[in-house]
Image (tube, rainbow, N blue to C red; front, side):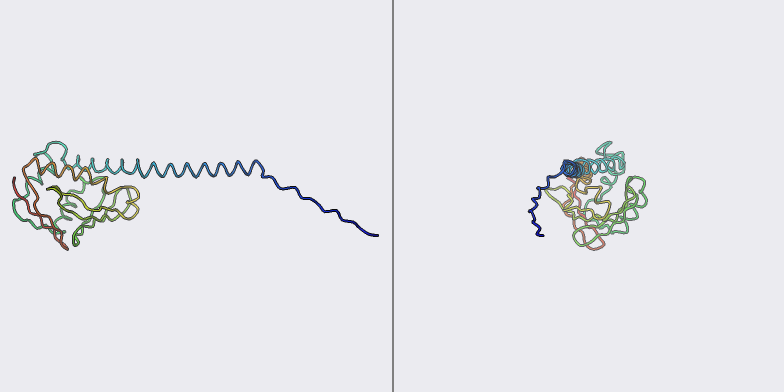
Length: 197
């Protein structure tokens, strides 16, 4: 007995509607995730950072008046004309004494390094290390290349945080007729030259 075999034709498998729908939902979820990350990075993070910087200016009394009545205006007015040397121990002692004014920053420790400064920070229960240079540009004090590493750096944008502080400090100097003509940072020491205009 001979057997004959008929070739079996296989039907091409059609994708089930369920598989296509699942792929569509996964694609949509990925786009929603990308959109949420973009909103956080370009809207929420800068806004939160600016808000923290503005609150710091308010707590230091720099927004009340330009020529007195607050810690920041008083500090600017107390700057002596001429060259002044400030070491990191003095800065850290000052920060520790006035820690309540730095909220939401819970802790800050400054290290003066060649050409810039490093600050170990704790805020919102997160730690980070800020690094930046400081320079004079057109007679104004500016932060150079600020960055914030660590978990806190994912929450706060240092450039947006420092913008209101930088602006207020320069406004106070101008309003009080003070001008910083030289600003250098060497290991362990900041050298500032102030003149009266």
